[in-house]
Image (cartoon, rainbow, N blue to C red; front, side, top):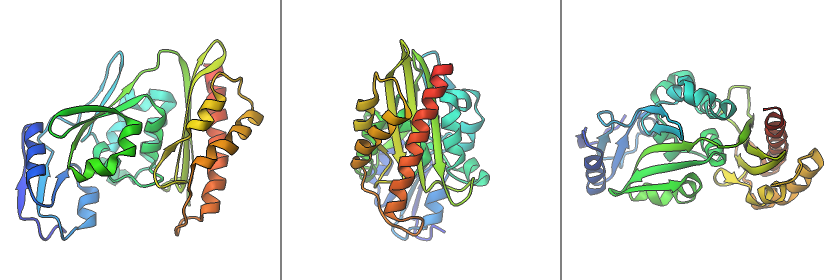
Length: 283
């Protein structure tokens, strides 16, 4: 219950929404509202409702896929373009974000803004060639990795995320997503994603990300560098993992110790990389 909300806006222009949010005290954008209502912040005084803005479209193009910020998580799962893209890991990750009822309400933009350390959608988007579009109120287009790194700063300045754009690969490619949770359909405690493009029988590009083993989902750039243009074997992946995991600073909480998280990250990353490589070779 949002008991202290004094002002409610429902703008029809995107630029107007940004101006209203940035000029109003303790304002928040309202997409699906699942997280905002659940939090019930007593500091919240102004709501800028996004439902009348043209931000809910999912559109497949020749060069890539546009996913509007207010597109629902269930919409990402059901849409033919996002469902099939990159061996289905985008839809697979969306499945792990919430229960079916909350996926019908929750939006892509809202999920990315409040994403926790093990957020599956953030983890998967880190390995895809994707970018975030946002207004402050000028339009900016930034790589998804940059958005994750500076997300808290962007939230504090109340920018409005308008869409995520995912580029289609031009080479043969494959992807894999691995998770561990308290139950098969529960939110991940730790998750890992891998995306590989192949050229002349070798990984021309390899992107690896892990969620739940650091303060935020993280790309394993050192590991990627060691494996690029290498004929991948389990031995080489395990060797590269010893270097890649040094980037992570796992944490303790009620769902798992730091030691458990690091051990699971090692297992899941290995599975994801080898799984993506096997699919890429068969493609």
